[in-house]
Image 1 (tube, rainbow, N blue to C red):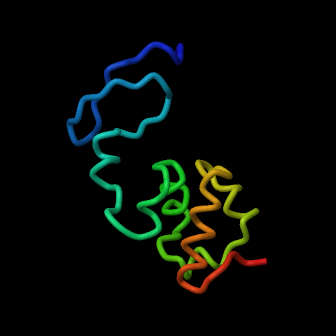
Image 2 (cartoon, rainbow, N blue to C red):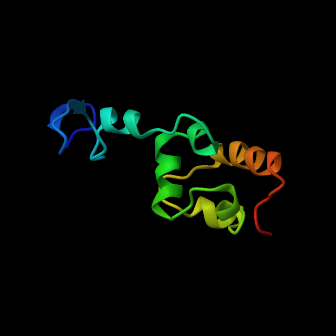
Image 3 (cartoon, rainbow, N blue to C red):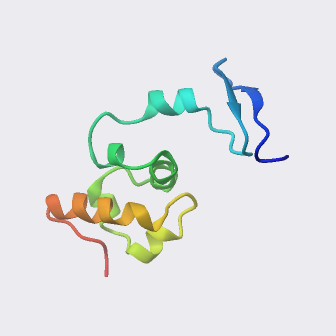
Length: 97
């Protein structure tokens, strides 16, 4: 598929949207699922899903991983690390060494 060509898609919930990539995520569902508060609300959708898909939904769980391990998750990029470091630090946690 040509990435500049947008295709009309329909998600399982019936939302219709246009997307040019192979990513199956519905932007309407994604906006509905974004947390309103907490450290996950500060992250991009791919970074948030990367953590959630690996069972990380709390700072305590996050603190059991090293930065290197977190960066190996599909969807997690280096731009998210400062936000994660800050959130951990505010609650007295840090990444595993």
